[in-house]
Image 1 (cartoon, helix red, strand yellow):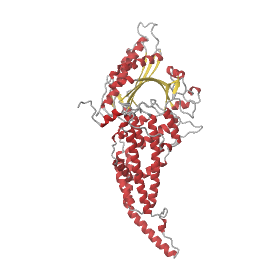
Image 2 (cartoon, one colour):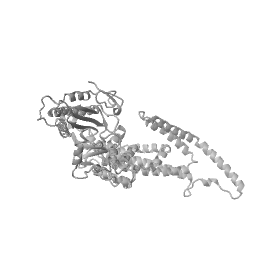
Image 3 (tube, one colour):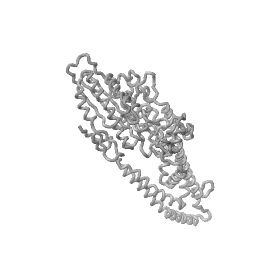
Image 4 (spheres, helix red, strand yellow):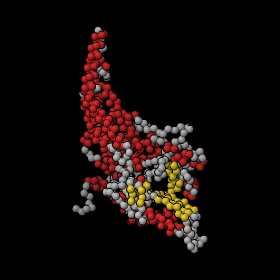
Length: 587
């Protein structure tokens, strides 16, 4: 048997479905669609960021089918609402009829014991206050455990007090007696113990059924087979969990399904309206950005025949030089540079846009305050920003490469301002890291039927501890930010994070991903720097000063501290995490 022959059922399965019509799902879409069902926190964050505000842009999201993921987000949140609402009602029924049941104390004690390990594992030691929050949770669990142990004794005391009160009342009233046992809830004349037992059994059935549904949904639609064309069908668009979802979520979901649509035929330049400090929404974390303000020095003997240095010529020449990397794809693994994407974009902060919303100049950006900002700018307005940036609107040339089956995305943004005596340059490389490991659980789910049943049973055992949280989740509504006719909240218009960024890991998963991100950054800079030098020399200016100054930030070697799974470090020596490190360049 040779090495290249198919040796597994999976290989034969892939070959049988290779020619099917249904396009496959990429790994990012699979993982995040499954994460909507597996991770409540991720689901709620996606709703809060992308679905609850109907005046936010549809963001640029490289490496992802946003509509598919958001459809599962809406379906998963609706399913959880109905599940937790039913559990809350049954819990109230159980507690009101089972206070005298000795099973209640044992159930609460077991729930407290089983909750200690998950609470302890939820500690995020790098986040301030996380340890104190977990300690508070553990103290509450300890109080529940102590109360569960004392519950039988408390029941005996209450029973004796009720008995003595009943005898005293009988002695005073003679024949007009009132039995306090009638105060125990009686539903349709049934025994309270029967009602509490049935309630507990129904809660167990609901939790097991919920886990089975999640297990089958993730394995059937978003498992590894979804990578094969036509291997699996997509979830039904008319599921009950979608039909019973809030109409406001469905309306915004329809906008994401339509995607970023140009408002007019002349609107061609992508516009990104952001909130917060980071304008490059969807690009991930910036690494080793640099900027230069360079006095321009005329070359000796430079004549009037030299081409004038303008912003348009600068962007055009640099863009063409970097785009030449497509012809040298062999420099990249799997020739990913063939798909190098070069595009101009305009970025504007939502705060700056809303501050000037009464001015006619903002009409191409935001036509009405009741609608989202435009997704594309008209060519005329983009040309103005291209040559003369505003304080609240900047033009950047974006270079983007998607690698590792679109899991790792390298984006670099170039901004320049040109005047006859000075050149200003900004260069900001960004890395969008792969999806974190806990959101990849769908790939490890097996066909063993007992696993979801066991998970449902464990959740049932912990229900007395998790019950209050489930009750709150059933009642909680993620509302839009406050606004009215006299108040404009800029946060309603700007985007801060995409679905990919919400699910991104804090470090690369593989050593090769670390060095590949470094590789693409260096390859882009290897074309950027000579292109700028050539533009300067062709325009009659000396590139020597630029080359000396830029060498300090582009010729460093990568230094990796720790194991291959540690944080990514780009150039020089970085102390601390990537987002807050300090750069000590090696020259």
